[in-house]
Length: 292
Image (cartoon, rainbow, N blue to C red; front, side, top):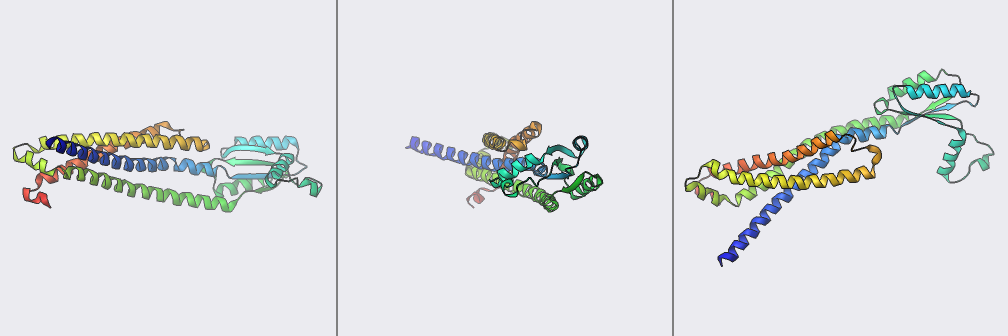
């Protein structure tokens, strides 16, 4: 009978430990994914900003040497990521590919113009910078027009500011919730052993002696939960990097490594503090208060 009871108690203990590990792993995993989002928010925003194109349309009378000189000047400018010359023939092929038919058969000629597509560095994608570039280039006689999506730039910059603000707010809230959830799981695990704690205290064991195995076991569970969470984060990061290689999520391994180390030690720290507080609470209770 005692053997059967011991096996039951062992299964119950393992189940309790398993639930604590899963709780810690899930919370740290979500917190780590949010950390990845925070670290890469600017990079993702910069990627979309750098898709904005400034198209400089050239007159048919423009000389090759003038066009080449302009392209080189733009390519070397501090605000330029890439300056690409697009001939009217290339533009026609792009339009043909987009609409799925040859529009020149109906028109009898190619109405498009030679142009230079300028892609700016992310920090320069602002209406002020774009207006300055337009004003600087407008005095060249062989440039017919300069176009970019002014509304898109304004909306994009406003949305980036809003998203960055709310991501930081959510990070703080989620970190607080993570601490509460892990603390609750640890407290429930310690609560199930409150009578053992009081019995040890009644036979003369010191608080430090009683607390030590609980803290040590919780730290072990925290380490296991953190490792599980880090494995999940690594899979998510690998998948996102393969799916969106242009964002270059792995470009800064030092920051990512620091995040992984931070999540690992956060799991240890929260479990240690939670166990210390929980055991201290039950150590300070009177025997008759253990039933409430």
